[in-house]
Image (spheres, rainbow, N blue to C red):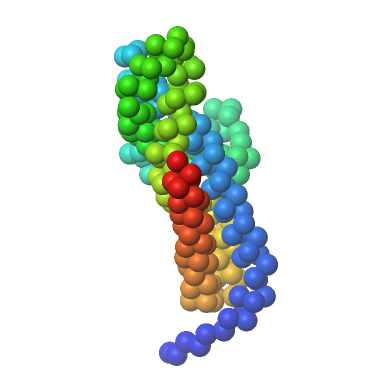
Length: 220
C-alpha cells in the first residue's frame, strides 16, 4: 500500500501550530524563571551550615530528579485535587516543571556559589558586610555570569519538555500535532512538521542565547 504526502493539512492548521509553539515557549520561560528562583534559594540552603536544611535540599533533589516528569505532572493535575489542592492545567504544569527544573538548578547554582573566590567573601566580611549583603553584592553577580551557559541549555531543554503538557490536554505544539493526526490521519506530515518546528526553534534559541553569553563575556 503506497502512501502519498499531503501537506495541505499543515497549511490549514498552521495558525494552530504556531499558537501551540508560542504557548510552549511561554510555558518554558515561566517554568525556568520560577525554577531559577527555587534553585537559587535551594542552592544557598544546600551550602548552609544548618544540617537539617542541607538534608532537606538533598531529599528535594533526590525525589524530583529521580521521578519521571510525566508522573509528576499526573500527580499535580490528577492526584492533588483528591486531597483538595486544585490547579488549572497550565498552572499545574508550570508548577511541576518549575519544581523539576529547580532541582537541577540547585546543583548549577551550588557550583556557581562554590566557584566564587573565598578571598572576595573574606574581603566583604572585612568591610563589615552582613551575610545577606555578601550574597547579594558579591556572590550573586559572579554566580549568575558563571552559570549563564547552563541556564541557556536548561531553557532549551525545558522547551522540549513542554511537549509533555499534551498529556493533560494543554494545547501546545505536540497537542496540536496529535489533534491533526486524529482528525486527518496525516501522521507523517504532522510529526515531520512539528519535529522541524522544534528543531528550528531550539536552534534559534541556542543562537540567540550564545550571542548574549558572548556579549556578557566580553563585557567582563
